[in-house]
Length: 446
Image: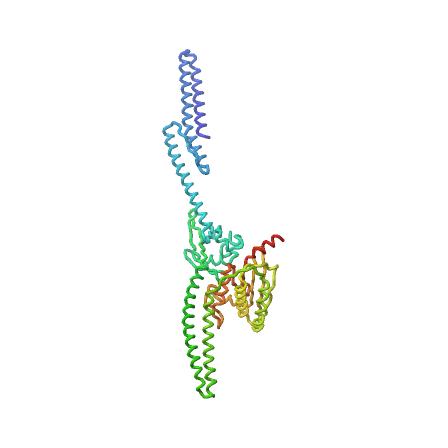
C-alpha cells in the first residue's frame, strides 16, 4: 500500500475519532462544542495541507522516474516553492541537462564513427562474444558474393577462403594474407571492450597495388641497368667479332670455315642475349591501351587454334573453347589481351603431363563475362601462393619468371578481376570482365 494512502487513512481515522469526542462535548455546552469543532476543522485542514506537502516529494520521484525513462530525457521539473524540494529539483535538472548533453555528444560521435567505418578504404570485421562474425563494413563486403557467407559464423567455418585465412592471424599481431594467388592484404587482429568483455576485430587493408608498384620499381631499375650494360657490351663485342671474322680470309682453307662458324655462334648468342634483355625491358613498358568493343568468342577460338599444335607436341588435349550463353562484347585492347591469353594457355599446357588436358570456357551473367582456363597439371598446389605473380619467380627449369607478371600488368591495366587457384585437383585461371554498355543495353531491350 502506498505511503500517501496510509497517511490518508491515518488522518481519516484520527479525525473520525476526534469527531466522536467532539460529539460527546455537546452536553458541556454550546461554547465548548464550537471550540472543539473549530479545533477539529483546523486539525483536518492542517492534515490535508501536510498530506499535500508530503505528496510533493513523492510526485517528484514519480515524475523523475518517468522523465528518466524518456528517450531522450529532455523535460525539466518546475519549482514548487518548497525550498528543500526546489534544491533537489535543481540538482536533478542539472543531472538531466548533463545527461542530455552527454547523449547528444555520444550520438554525434557514433554518427562520425559510423560514417568513418562506412567510408574508410579499409575493411573492418567485428566478431561477437562467441567469436562469430557479427558485422563488417561495405569495404569488406566487396570481397564477398554475399555477406551471408560469413555473418553469424566463426571465420574458420566461413564459406570464403580469404576470411578463413584472416581468422588464422594471431591476436594482437599483423600479417600479410595472400588470396587468389596475387592479392595481398595487410591484416591486423586486435580486441576492444564491450560491456566489460573483450571482442575481437580485424582491420583489413588491400596492399596489392602498393606492393606491386614497389616490386615494379625495383625490377624496372634492375632491368634497365642490366639492359644498358648488356647492350653496350654486346654491341661492342659484336663489332669486334665482325672485325675478327673478316680476318678469316687469311687462314688456311681448312681452318677458315670452322673459324667463321665459331664466330657466328658467338655473334648469334650475343644477338639473342641482346634480344632477351630488350624483351625483359618491354615487361615494364607496356604500350598504352587502345580499348575497343570486341567479341570474346573469335579471340578464344583463334588462341585455341594457335596453341593446338603446341598442345599436341606436349601430348596434351586441347578442349574448347566452350560457351555458356552468347558471351557478349567486352571493352578491351584485343592485341594485349591476346598476348595475355596466349601466355595463360601456354602456361597451362606446360603445367600438364602427357595425357593431360587444357579446357577453355566462356560464360556470362547479367553484368560480367567470365573466361576460365583449366589444366590438369595442378602444379599450383605445390607452389607458395605468395610467390605467384612476383617478378622472376618460376617453377619451370628454363623459365624466366616474367610471363605471369606480364599477364598481371595487362589485366590490371584493363581493370579486370582475375584469380589463379587450385580447385578439385585442377588449376584454374579466371578472368572476369564487365560486359560493354552496348551489350547490356541490347540485352535489356531484348
